[in-house]
Image (tube, rainbow, N blue to C red):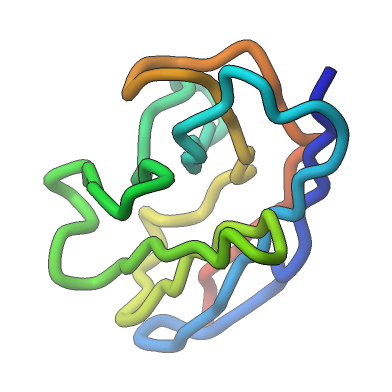
Length: 117
């Protein structure tokens, strides 16, 4: 089992920045990819960004050039640096982990990000 704990969400003005963190604990056998998904009210959960243990990354088109995902394997922690935030980025952000660049079996509890003036 893998436990994921997110932190770093909050309220920010348009154009601002936030950094989310996802700390993993437990058994890491078969865990390669850590990623971030988000779900806005009335919408489906969607991939934001993901990163493999080797550093390969994948981004949603809507966040390319604004968001950066990176990880510290020594701390079993993944980060999502979000810059130039816009109201449409408002959502609950969830950390996810698994073996491949598809939805993995482990989820965090979610952290709210609200972009509003």
